[in-house]
Length: 299
Image 1 (cartoon, rainbow, N blue to C red):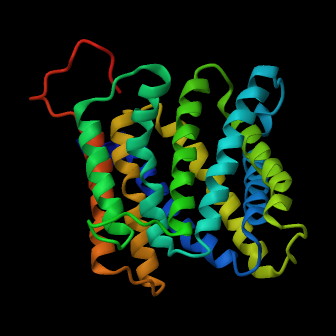
Image 2: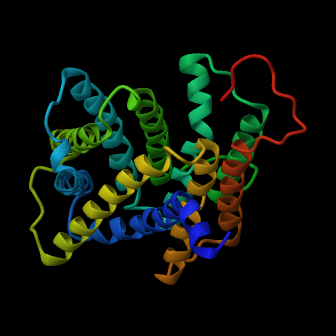
């Protein structure tokens, strides 16, 4: 196999690796943007920009909406609003690196919630991954093994990871029943609208001044979110979900590297905890051949 053939065959995997780099970089970009906007309105504007970007990339698909697609878009958009809204509030008081590691806990949470909601019993490796991720969380909070005392920023970011786990579950549930591009536009639009409606409950009653740094950040994040979503939808038709999840585990690593270049320095114990979270994510998706599969359905 020559190099061009190999690159063509690995294009989906390479594409997912590239978007994890973009995804990882978005944390510190959001943190910078919060210098010019309150958090919920920032998320509302971010997803408004993303909805416009996806619409421009999917013009020929934006007709023939049906009630089920609107329902799917609303459900997914609601958990996106909760997930990214809480994550953005958390970024006001914790570093982008820490936020990325905590958010990555959605990967081992997905099969656990699938078990609770759909009775799909998790694989033993999923439980091992959850255990490692929990130990990593203890270290990441900086409290050691004696106690788990989450700060407000850490706690609300964890709530965001729960919402993002349900986002993934809902996307999987609706994916085969809807037009993905139309629903992508709808979920981004609903996420934006819901954040605009929620913002006053957080005391955010005035839109931020559209200074050029904020406009630049919103445009960059909007385009990034559009590309990430479209690439994921394309690549995951050809990449096994387990392999994709392992690739996504690189996202907090990229966030930590970019954060370090920007001057962030996690304590050694917290960095070890972050590495354990990533290890837990990878282990939760590993299916070694020597473990015999049970007869019942697993995730």
